[in-house]
Length: 235
Image (cartoon, rainbow, N blue to C red; front, top):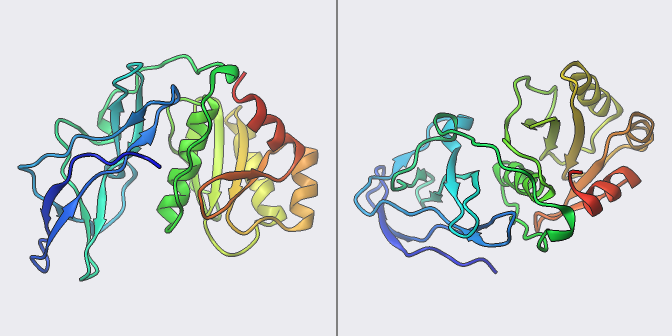
């Protein structure tokens, strides 16, 4: 169970309800919990549209000093408004520097701590946290939007996250592989609903690791390539 930061009072700008909010912490690659410092004097803002740069912030681990991108704190009000919580001294991920740090060796990895999946955004967060645990750096939204799902990228890697209830198809896997080839990158696929049989067969021949995201946010390897990646991380 992750620790929660100190609670702050948040007022919904739409219905004026008061909420008590505490931001969750996320596990750094070193295993230490990382949580944003909430701005007690800041004002919550209603989320009217989604932009990757506004959804993520850069935080420094107080234990090892590593800087990584983490989801910006949000709260759902009973009136239906999604509130973006003010964070002290932080900027959007796109505005923050992403200084490089060498990935932690696989033998030193701590047990993976998943992110519970309730929304499509949670699925992307869970995949990003997992990739970071494997040792990938500079995780961001992919430059090219995939035909289905959401594309995220890291240094030397292109990943696709499919949060729908439809199993990933042969075309989905091939499109990811072709896009990764044009960028001279490796690729990996995450799906909530699994994969069609021909998609799994094609992934094996193309060298694409396949994972299924369960609702706890834990990626489950589907093929041997995914088993190997899960076991060794980034070499």
